[in-house]
Length: 279
Image 1 (spheres, helix red, strand yellow):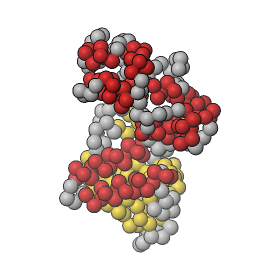
Image 2 (cartoon, rainbow, N blue to C red; image 1 turned 60 degrees about the vertical axis):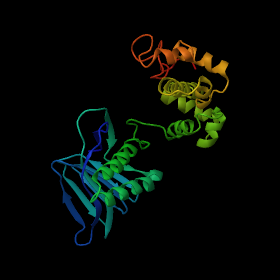
Image 3 (cartoon, rainbow, N blue to C red; image 1 turned 120 degrees about the vertical axis):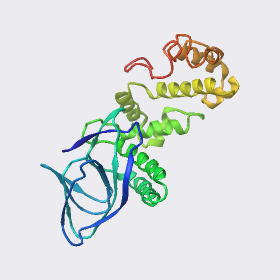
């Protein structure tokens, strides 16, 4: 078994969380949870076997094993890991996740989340659940190197930078510099993964934010434009008409249902332009 399918749209039920210490009295454990998922974050070297699949264990690796799966742990001396036993609920979007992954630079953040979950579990199970849920989302979105559900790390980093700086000046060279690659390389990988140019993506995200503020706040049109990173009112009006088919005032007046009654305005801002479309 190399991959498993998880559904994370609903918070999991965390049954137990802790720090496991193994490899002291035996170099081999066999383990199965009939009804629960197993989440482990490792701080040692060893191996995990599931059927015919053998996965190396190294510090910073994370595994997610589905219920009723017999696992064999092979240790090389005293071995400690964070563990969580949990239930994942049916329904929601299915995500294919490797059974074992190298969390790499995400490992310290995952360790912090799981440490909080372990300490919160005895007195505040809802807090522990929140920490584990966040950790699961991070695990599901780790950059992939096996080609299954690939999300390019440069694209993910570029999108994160855009979100953090949406209200201020943004240019493709700015984003490329922050990510640490060339303008040309960023443009190529971003278009290949999203179907959009970086400029189109920035414009779309700004208009999504503007639409939210127009419909959900009493901010003035001028303030909404500034919050969306489009300080020029004429440019903001033109961008709204292009994205929604209506002026900012008309978008606000139409409300969430919009003129077409389907929650969007003439094509709406609830999804990016079609893949491969014009920038």
